Length: 81
Image (cartoon, rainbow, N blue to C red):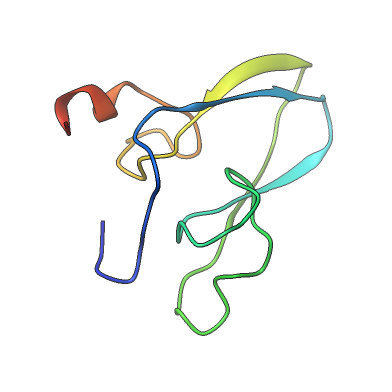
């Protein structure tokens, strides 16, 4: 995580995603609507990760910003405590 990023909790955020919808995952940690982008990254030099899913599904979206599978939680937060 760079010094420009921040996060409030290491635990993933459970989200229900809809097939074919476009989502913008917050990568800076400044969003007031985590885990999704609200534009708070402006001026940080960072951008959201834009993604879609192929089917309706409930997932854990990474909130620690350390996952190797952006934007999905891969459990990395467990070793970051």
